Image (tube, rainbow, N blue to C red; front, side, top):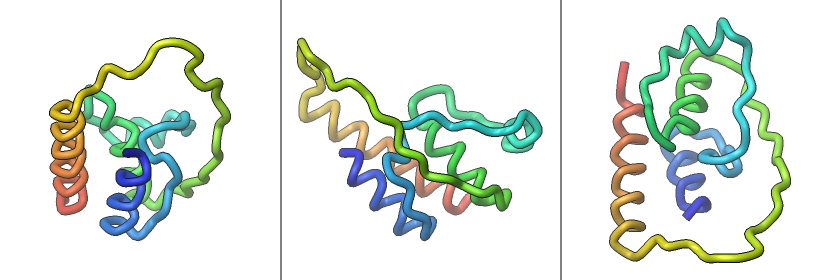
Length: 99
């Protein structure tokens, strides 16, 4: 799913960011305030990158390692997955053509 998000993001914004919806976003306070972020959910990661690009900020892609899950499994079913894809697509396109 992350690869799909990354490709969609690239085709809309012509900027390849590996795992756009993951990895920490680190920025100066004045950059944060200027972005006027509105997302209240997991789309916030993409909104930060989108608004950072629109404001001309330098985006550095630094992969962060993580420890894979050792027990349990994801409980996302096909319908949840489909709804997440539609939600991401809708929001990404909205931000592409906003302002």
